[in-house]
Image (tube, rainbow, N blue to C red; front, side, top):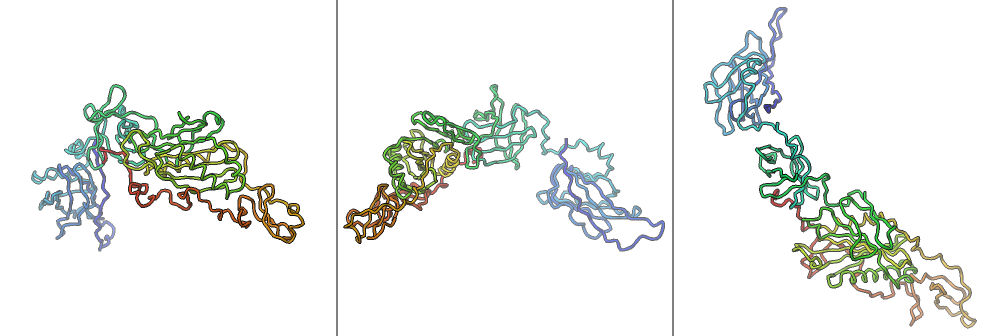
Length: 524
């Protein structure tokens, strides 16, 4: 089968100066011919001019007229009895003149002009459409690939490279594309079936890879790297993925569920109770191999009395709680951490911390970038447990998995039915002092720990105990933010968690500085 193209006609429009005579006058007819390039090479410029003209006509070809192509050309309107002869001028790709005729070729409407070898004299044949079909229908240009007529069904489908993080997708129309695990695509290109194998080419004709069928149903390349047929084009997870799968916590919280994307696996952690452990399905061979999301209910004690005094007190003790978890989980692997983003969510408090970890926390691999981690701690009430969610990843991937973790946490089915709201404003208490106090103002605590002011004549409510305290030396009321809290000074708000942690930490740069697209030597 030939690979013909039909170019749009470029009409030579002649101005008709004279109208037809009265009855019986000869009418002009449009003369349209088909030019076939069977010269064995491409033509870059083609002109066909009537011999009655002193100049060559306008070029019909402004793009490459390839060997093996057909093109319709309108030569103008003429009276049949006055049809002139035509001359032809054509140039090849290197600028050489292929045809420059002084012969007057006589053509009629519907004829074919066949441009044959320019080395023959004149190398041009004029024939009718029927004669063309008889003489030239089987012309096969020397460099045009025959369209595929072979069966490549054994090669079609979605193939995963075993030693590289991307897929080749091949269809039965002899087209292919490559997709890496980040969802980036190369191609499409075309497939050529050769003896015993296929070869994939880019659109520009450059060769990409040759593939052979193996007995076990695999494909292999020239270096014996295997490609495995897959039913699903599984990519690395992103925050945009649907949370279509459900997982349940282990042990004491087996009735609590979360949803997660199909691009991840979920199950119990071998060393952590009451947990769900999540990893990317396609992490092998990628930077995401060093990525993990762990969500677990962890025991706590001694925090409940402070959590019931309102957000001001709870924030400070949530910082303590998170610091305890960071140090107990990471120990000497923890280089630096910051805490921020405290939130009162109505039925729980939460705080998020950001960590820089030693690369040696992973026993294998030569890491080319720092390890980062994020921890969110949630307090759901006096249950004896806090929820701890930890995302660990290399720096270039931490934001991606941090966002995924947040999406997953939004689906948790757990609630303890607790409220962070302070109790209602206390009613006016009974007179607090004895008769000697009359007229002497002072601050005092009621039995719930809330603060009142005796102005000498009546009691005035000042604040909940969570919002302030009475200085033991001066007896003056102090708001909580004046309490002189000096817990670890690397906890502070309004910090960009993904920025360089400061002078002296040159190895830790902004995420995105490290990116491996996974194409390797195939498309590098």
